[in-house]
Image 1 (cartoon, helix red, strand yellow):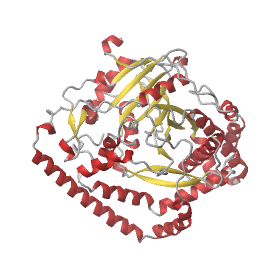
Image 2: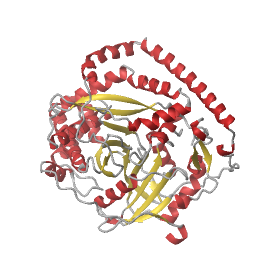
Image 3: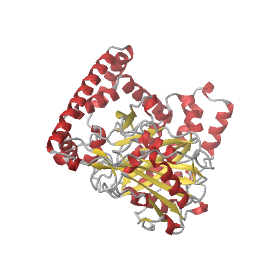
Length: 534
């Protein structure tokens, strides 16, 4: 990785995820990866161990400064043991999708142990059909979605034969822990980091001021004026905007990228606009399922936006801003919905809203570290009459080619973005090997029926494909693409890893929500020595 000698001091954005976290808000990004066969445990552990020198952060722990006078730092873990991070677990019979989703939900409910490096893997055996799975977790302070996806690419193999021999880097002696440093050193660090962030905030302000003079920004601001009534309206609580408990449920869906591209070319917009359209229509169905109206109502979705340049894709840490959009739920025609979503996202982009949000975050980051710690720690305890947003939806580009673990091909990878506070549901999307994978994380008490929302994703996507075929531009789809869309919309195929297809999901979506049932228990994951695992 490019970031082979990372900075010791956490950025303000990275540190914020440490201050925000508590048992009701576990802040690890994660994914559930499914392979076409059981992942050989010993071989997998040895492969990960051979690559750890490529990611020094995987051998470092967070050290918090005394009285939060300075910024947290990454320090070498003098007692690092890889067997404290890679676990083996076997699903109880029948080992289907429901059992795997339940296991993932329990793992995602747990906080990572800050006395160790902030990551772990669970290698899962006992899946139906002779498949295997790996559940990945790493703390949001360590990486954002883009760098987390890059880490997965580093840890997996590009070919079934495995990686080429990787020369090990010479390990330097551990740095002294901040606990050995004086109070004067802590104050000096605080002053130095504050000055650096003030300079960065000033540079960001100057850059944004220059962008305001551009024609693109001027046109974007004119379009933003038309959206002001929508943006100024108060945010309404949707059925899942309630205080979260910390217990999580996880489920997923997947779609072919070829179908999404066909819709996009027929109607317009970007891939992310199609994603937001499908999600918004699914949310509208979910809202009506809970007895609420969608007429003249908007869902406020925040989309993380990567600020990385081309040569920064492998850098660790968080380099993101946020693009807030207000999307109407009451539009009945799927094509009109996609056009409405595209118009709003393009307007917000041209107006530089993500840059403005990043500038505001930079101003907060310029505050002295003790004030930052106090601000982020206290934020979740503030009770607002209405939420600031309804839901987070992140869309991360993943590897376009297959990846392998121990010779087993990864056939699916379902991402997870943390949720908490009063965001009872969040959505993560990732592309991989010709497909688009959705992961829905929900608070188990706020949105226990999150699988109904997943079913609505399939229904909404099928409707959008049908509407695009009928109402899109005839020249936008080639004959082969029209046949592909027609075949999938008239006879939808379930994902390989799903127990229920889109057709079954559509039938269940019209029925009353079933009574909540307890998830089938799975074997509790425990650390396993590789010798015992053999």
